[in-house]
Figure 1 (cartoon, rainbow, N blue to C red):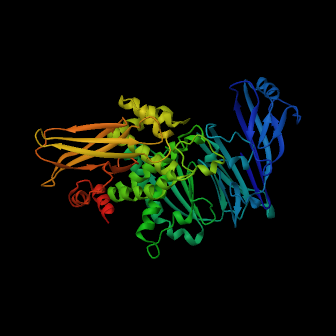
Figure 2 (cartoon, helix red, strand yellow):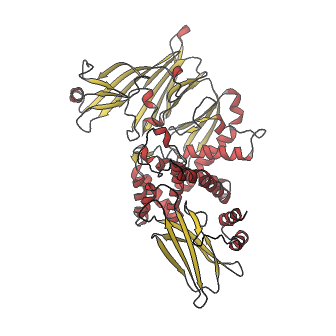
Figure 3 (cartoon, rainbow, N blue to C red):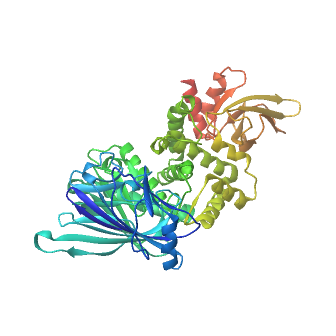
Length: 555
């Protein structure tokens, strides 16, 4: 791709190598009100006639199969499609695609912004290797795109003197991960040495007056890179990682391959003006977007119905990261649960309730919900609860090995987890299709004669079939408060199921749903809250999350 940025308009020349998979037309997405086609050419075809060789339909440029056949016969089966278009970033008030805000150009292509830049198969399962040349007036000191910087320099002379930069990303990616930034920005340079010994250049760009507030974000990125290596064996894959934090970016943050773009509110931190919570948030957001390099970029979604595959998984990863590096796993868990209970449960109870993998949508932008992100992360967390930390890592390793460079589904993720651990998770897949908040009710009985404690659990949800719900349970001696049964993960698979704990020396108090092992509402079957039991758990429970939660229910 070749971008020539001018005042009032931008020229975009694109050369696509298209591999023929089947007979038929080639459909390119494009918003005709934004993208003005200047020329269209196929290598090996002298002329193309509108209405015969290609046609326009709302939101699409369709190149007819007869023209493609002529091109393919001249290029050993491959087709070279060339388009030249003109766009106007200055008038792009949707801030989707390439837009100009103040003195700089910036892009936002997720979910369907690339079709506002040029005609292209703008869908997440269409992955390609991009080489991008950006040319602009010499006042634009910084010209950025995805991948490694191949070449930069000057072109033109005198008053028409301009700058250019060429970027190459060797990893296939969908168009929603494309990025371009051009402006006069300050820079903070650093580096990171990967676990294999490669030195990666780190460059953080922002407005000149903000560069002194970037240092914490730089350190956060290095912690995230090291954590991903140690936790999941995932090493950064390019020689350069760029971060842009500007006031004019319309989204909070975006994980474009090797060029993460943020609004300054997500990145800047200053000990004079920033609170501890600000620092915590910066670190989490930086980590989240970096972790997308593997869970979202290297392995991406087949279609937008699978959005929770990348977002739910990456939210879980950033939560684990925050808990580990700050040595506050319980506090991080409490914060996460508060968001789900306070926001996602309300979404579940409202008219917009939907599964974390929705089945339909009116506008793709409506998909970015608490359910897709937060409930999706709880679904991922349940895999780890069911399989254990080692089993979850095995599943992640297999997921990356099988699907690196591919666009996949939630079912592919589930299969990786199941196959890596030799277990059947088919029932667990119902979580992806179930809207609303499941409810688990419980009752218990202790037989003093045999020392057997029986816990009975009943589940209800909007799914006609029972879900697989991991319920983490511990038992505390009623007299001493000692933990007599450590955390045990019960698999609730039936509508109603009883679990026996034999050979106990005395009556016990159950600590249920430890560490909030599933995104459900937990109620006693009697409907009566036992404040004595809650007081006992608030003071004695060895599970710190449940100790906090018991206190919350009391007060």
